[in-house]
Length: 120
Image (cartoon, rainbow, N blue to C red; front, side):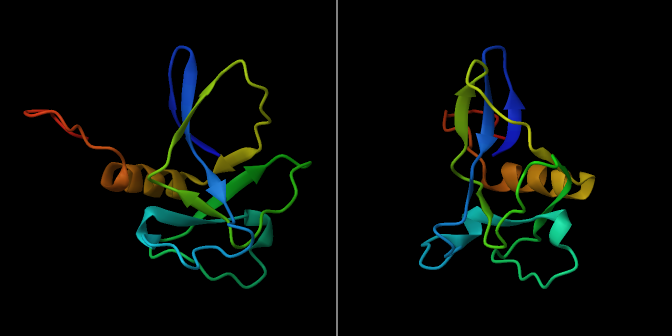
């Protein structure tokens, strides 16, 4: 998961999937996903599955196995998790990828549905 919001008792994160190695095959709205590339696989061939520029990791914990080239982040399906759940911080995105993710979240993230709301 990629953490996108921190709150007092929980955080919000965008989940990562491979869809059993199928990537975006058969997805009705592929624009709602963005590919994530493991920086440790930069030497090999890589084809982004999404229409968006792929995100790239900058650092990853040494014990984390290389991610699947089919890894995609589900932009429109963020999840909330309590801090008391055990986690392993695996790494960080590059600064460019973080900026890209922020822009994609603003574009595809939830909008304020209230009349007269400010939106995102």
